[in-house]
Length: 332
Image (cartoon, rainbow, N blue to C red):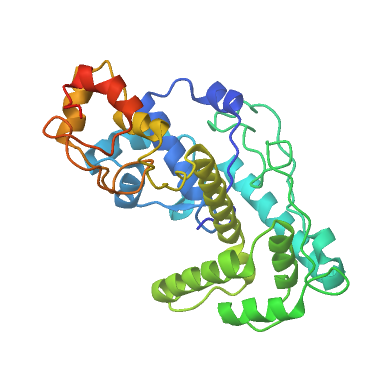
C-alpha cells in the first residue's frame, strides 16, 4: 500500500508539457509516475527489465520508449527520479510527520480536535521546464474542496471525549506494538473521528496487513499510521455495502404473507382464475387445477374436481355463471 495513496494531477499542466507524446508514451509515463509515488523515496530502480514490467511492454519495446521517457526523469545514481514528483512527495512527507508530532504533543484529550489530514500547498501552472509534470501535482492528501464527505464527530470513547486508552491498547496489541508509541494516539483518534468501527474496520484491517507484511518482509509495521488509509477504506466499503443493501431492500420489498383460499369468496375465485374471456387462461387453469406451493397469494390447497371433467359443487354459483360457458365447465 502506498504511504500517501492520493496523487492529484492537474490536467492542464500535464498536457502543456506532454502533448508531443503518443498514447502509448502517455500511458507509460503515467505508470512510471504512479509506481514511483508508491515507492519509498519516490524513485524507481534503473533496470530495463523492471521498468518494462512496470510499463507493461516487452524489453524490445521498452528500449524504444526509454529515450523518450528518460527526458522527464533524472536517471543518475542508478535510479529514475522525477524532479517535481519528488518535491511534492517530500513536502507531503514533511507535513504528515509534523502533524503526527503535533498530535502526540497535544495529548490524547485533544487528539480528536487536532488530528486532521494536512494538505501541502499546490504548486501553480506548468513551469516550462519540460518535465512533463510541470507544477500540476498538488498535495498527496485530498482537501475538503475535492468533494469529500465531511467527517463525522468522534464517538465518545473516554469520559472527556478524548481517545479511549483501552481502545489504543487493543489496537496496539493487535499490531504487535508497544502502547503509547509516538503518533499512534492521533492516528486512532482520526479513525474514530472518521467513523471507523473497531470490530468491523480497525482490528480486521490491522490483522490482515500485519500478516501480509510479516509474510513479505518478516516483521510487522512499526506504527499504526501504516494502517491509516486501509482502515478508512474498510470503513468506506462497509458503509457502502450497508447503503447498497438498504437501497436494494427498499427497491425489492418482501412479498406479503400468503393467505388461506376462501372457497366461498367470489373475489378469491376470481383472483385465482383470472380473465374469464381468455380461452388460453381457461386451458391453463384446467391443466393446473390446484393451488400449489408456488402460488404468490394463496397457501397451497385442493380445489376439488376439474369442472371441465366433472361437476364441482365447491364453486360458488356466481363464479359458475361467469366462467362455465366460456371455459366449458360442467354445470350442476
